[in-house]
Length: 296
Image (cartoon, rainbow, N blue to C red):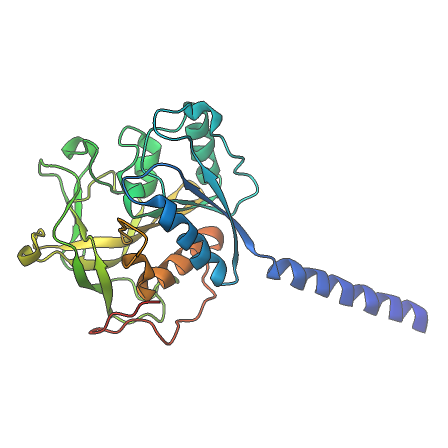
């Protein structure tokens, strides 16, 4: 017969282990936000993105800022090992070959990656990066970069010649959920209004291992393509998960597009999914509806 002291010790050990496990599970997910150059106002948007992610209670966000344009990019080499995901708010000069290789291996070996808006304009000549984002625009992209990607009841890969990346007038537009069962989209409305933003179109690239989560119609009346354009996507690259949001234009501190609850919630959910493969967040009561924008 086991002594009561032995049973007490084992019970205490089990409680300590359970408490330790609970503490670990409650620990925030460490995320690295990269900025420093962008054709958008990253000095306003990066603090907001950090606030958005940390306000979920799930993330601890550190920021790594590159040298300014024309600086010595070789000194920019943050250690990625502590982080569950990297969020890019960067569109500028190429990172060093050393850091490109480190970033590629980080994602390939299971690190999460989130590409925000103009981050899909960056690095047109970096093959692995373009496989990670799936499609991108501008900076010389064309048919050699890969097909245009758009939606006609399913994904269409159009190999016609032409530029990669354009957009019409900024306006509010309706997002259409295409993968309602995906963890990022689960529980979100089938249709929801997004605040005034750039509706990226004619995005093109390798488009491998890609899932289109949501699209928006680029109306010709707004100088769009007249097609349903992919704006929220997920991809895989080796063991890594990537969430690509083309939403979130900003030219100044008002950050109207990034203050849309749809942008906020999908960024929070997409970052959690990239970091862990699951989404634990509930859909907030103020999420936009099919006919009404919602902002914070």
